[in-house]
Length: 515
Image (cartoon, rainbow, N blue to C red; front, side, top):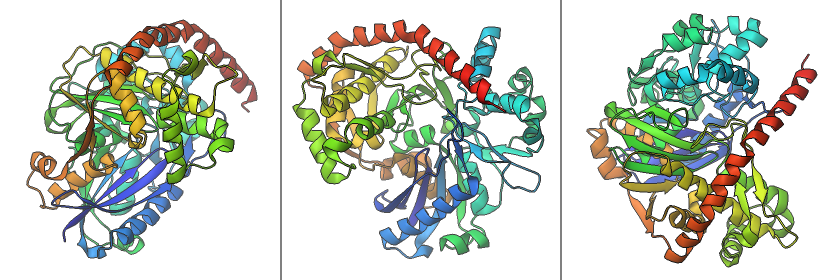
């Protein structure tokens, strides 16, 4: 049997899946929590050596679960969360811990840029709303607050690129990850103009060589082969940033095809054949294979992480630690809970990056409206699911482009009731892919092409991507959500100045605590 390995190095977990290189069938998988650290409020870091060790362990577990010989693996593709700051020094060692994209240490600097009009200039070139956790902002922050560390940087790349480097010894990145540096999105290259505007022009030459999505970075080194148990010399492809990898993995390769991902972030991504920057100054625009673009209207402040928090904070006594049996109870209880319980609405911006679409509100945070003495854990769970679904309405509604179909994936999409809520909120059918780990499948498809198991990406998509089911919207439920959406929207607009006030208070306290 010919197999390929897809690695999805996520923000909260690393997933590795062994796929049949001809059919796309998932043969075995493993997952481990990503080791993260929060040394200060709103900081989000990783020890890069520990991260790679977790990847190595997960590879071994996935191959064992697949029950295939290690030499059946013909190629490897790696996906990773985008943004952040992953840097090596002149000896090709990490320059301190990696800073992941949810990190908000540079939020005050970003406010300065906004006041100066710099964030709008960044958007006009890159198509990306600046958030605190992108390299451009983090590098400027580092230059100001830790110049010694800044001066040691020799190589800049991204999470998946570090994994590829440890697997092959080769340094490279790809177009999809470069999108979030940010780059000149029209020219599909690094933007020297933006680097100069941020005061970090000297870092332009430090960016790793940029390859096309799916190009072979290198081949598995003897050292990495010994660690993973795989055969030395197999090709390792660039892979893609997680949002792009997920789109590839569900077959959303043509203009008008969309994918909603309920993961740690909540992403609503539309493939386009031109770089659309409207609505201005919100969302993201990433580079896709074959000269296309992906418009992201995303709620980086939270998708499934909001549900995780609610269950941890309010559901432990009711349900205990979530496992398969517990999830069956949760689903049953949520289904028995009326829609919009007690008029409750939750804004799902729990993470440190706030809201990036349909408005750019980095200071946005979660809120619960309509909480009462009769509100149960199940009601809070349902309200989170409905808040994410109404954010989906927000995001697609802001796009001036045709959406021909929507796939839904990510950890949250495993929930049947959550899929039904989302379908009713947007009032259109949603298709569920046959493979849960679509990001891993997307880069595995690229690996299958590199290994010669598939002739090209279009053929790989036709052969390896399958639809498991489709959920149609319930008309009565769709009406309820259509009636509630204006309140959800208007509450968010009214809270915007209060989110900023809260952010100023937090930043003032953090400034006093800094040495």
